[in-house]
Image (cartoon, rainbow, N blue to C red; front, side, top):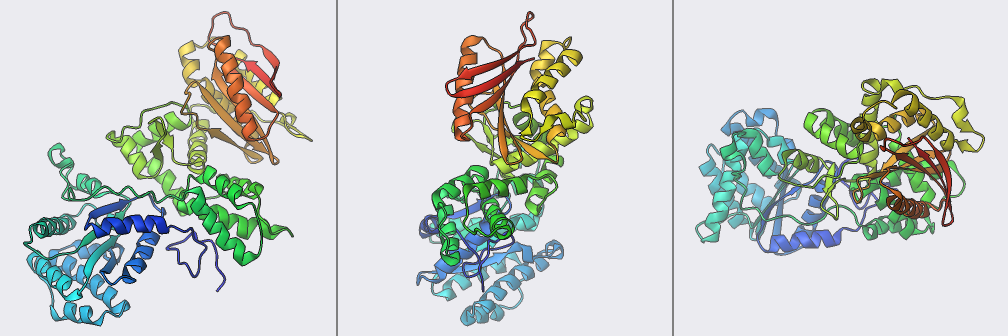
Length: 525
């Protein structure tokens, strides 16, 4: 069977090109060896189920551990309607696992126990199972989110906790290690069931160790996936450069890495004779996934989570649209929710940062679409053939026209409004011009909230526009250096500056600036 890049379900080594995550598996094994109970809570399609699958195979290969891997996705809503149905459902999942993996002695044990009717009987069942196994049993439960808002699941957690504590004092026999996997951590599930403040953070899973294994793909791990692919295809691309570019757009989000590779393999190189990959192919794959007419289950979920949480929508708007730099405080419920959904991560400076450039682009496009229909309808429709030339997009003309627009429509607005909304006005002005012909991408600038870089791609050409607030000539020179350095990352010699000047005696001017080896066209509004 020919391998492929997988974007659906669990990755299987014999069927899919996969990154070598053996170091991550070994790190989890070390936690198991210490008898830890822990939760793997990561966003959707972040490789949790694949990690459990690889971990299970690794444990089966030992003589010490016996994995017992089940998924609560296999429990129906009816399974939570009563204690009896929950116990029946749990035992069914356990028996099915033993049957599939031909563990006849344990299957016989479970069938011999008959039907369990109480949690006390379940406790005895667990102890007997661990004794009968002859090895240390590691319980792995996937999709614990399916049990949210249910008291029976809390009772189940409480039982595991009591047995864990009793084991520590040699008062009980139970699982050597327990791993719960899902998007939400157990504390979040607890909060959803008991929202009152007294119990909100009193989790029954306070026995759990911190799970610090990074499941995202590092560039070197992405390289192993590409090496697997290139060996099979007989090509010799610049693997390190391609891996770095894949990481640049995805920040190692496993699904997104595989998705971009799938685009390149199945939609890009198949359209040409040359099958070797290049960094330019990654750029094209990013353009494809950034296309607002394209969607996936993950991207649908991303936007759904935004729309269903108004406070999170506002927070993401502040970061993505307004370029605000906010401290990453995980105890803030809104920031915590954004982190839970994979939208937010802490930057190196401890500020809120969008997890990856793909998410940033898609959330930016969605929010801008809403603004153009409501608050910024006045700039929706500023498009025309004069902005497009045989050479590409005339960014200089766009800036000059925007300057005229600001002078005619906003010259009398108070500075407070323009400082807050001025950059958003430009983004709203730009969107209709390039929509359907190219795309604009706002680079995160958490290091300097007074500036914002926008990368516009049109006909395979890039144009970098820096938006900044006028703070005097010294700050201006610093901005020119920053823009010049940023242009170097794209090997560009031309760039653009849009400067918001809030001095009372300002003038709407334009200037062609030579800085180092760059030509920079600057417009003041």
